[in-house]
Each structure stands twice: as structure tokens, then as C-alpha cells.
Length: 204
Image (cartoon, rainbow, N blue to C red; front, side, top):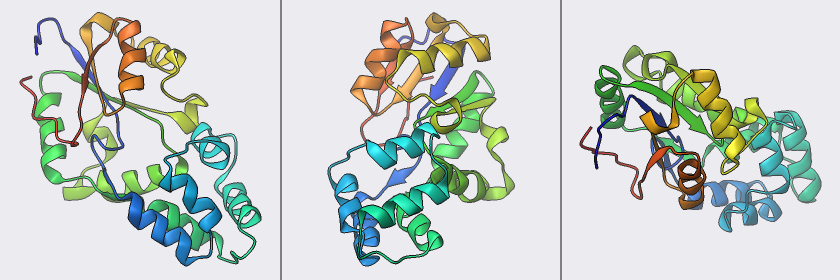
């Protein structure tokens, strides 16, 4: 890839930095008698209650209430429902964190993610706290869908991030696993790399 002129890198979170296990999450929801909800995970359907959680239009407690409403046999507590949804996230390998720290010595580094309060809590308190670190050690700023009330591939979420960070699209590289998200970024003049296996051993 031609790295000429790149000054900024924006990372996605899911499947780029964090490994996901859809089947483990499905089993966790089924175990609390919420199979009506696990089908959303199985079909990768980001709609209704999952989309609302990612947009920040419902709280975690409202999300749990909706899981129980949609799954009449589910009598799980909020903590059990939160744990089921959190089980989607497996880990952020240290090699990826070390790579970000290496890149940060040469580029401004940001994160832009469709995520929710449950998953981001895990990211902050478990994944990015490894080796005594914190989120700000890796990213200058984080742009999270549930706080911005926008989700990718909306061009507006990219535009807001660019404005807030005060960076130019043509000087920015976006790394994501979604073709739709990459296409939206490209339309704004952002350079993109689509990754499939989560590892970004890039010549940067």
C-alpha cells in the first residue's frame, strides 16, 4: 500500500482489534432461554434492540428488559443477560496492542466503532488495560456509536470524527473488516484497508 501522505490511522474495533465468537454468544443466550434473541446474533442482524443499544437510544437495563420481553421463557437477571452479550468478545491479542503503540510513534491513532456500553466496558476494563495500559495509551480519541448516536456505514459518523479530530480525509487511513464501512469512508476521500482475519501487519 502507498503510505505517502498518511498522517492518521482510524481503527475499527470488532474483528480488527478484538476477536469475536458468535457461536459462544449464541450458546450463552440459549442457556438463559433467550433463543428468540440469539437468532439475531446467528444471522448477524444489527436491528431492533441490538441496533438501539449501539445507537445509545436505550440503556443497558432497558436492553435487558427487552431481551426478557422478546423471550418469554427467559427469567435471567440483568447481569446474566449482560454476560451473555459480552461473551461475543473474546480477546484483544497483545501483538495488536503492541503494534498500535508502535504506529502511535509515527501517526495519530483513533478508534471508530459501532459498539455499545456493554462491550465497551469490557474493552476499557479488560482488553485495553493489559500490561497496565489504558485506552488513552493507544488512541488519541475514541469515536463510539452509542455515544455519538450514529453508526457506520453512515457518512455522517465519519464526518463528525474527522471534524472533531481536525484531520483531513486524504491524510487518513481507515482499517475495518466491513466492505460497506470501507466504501462509505472512501466516498469521503479517506484511504482504506479492509482486513479479514483481524491482523493488520501493514507496511506502515
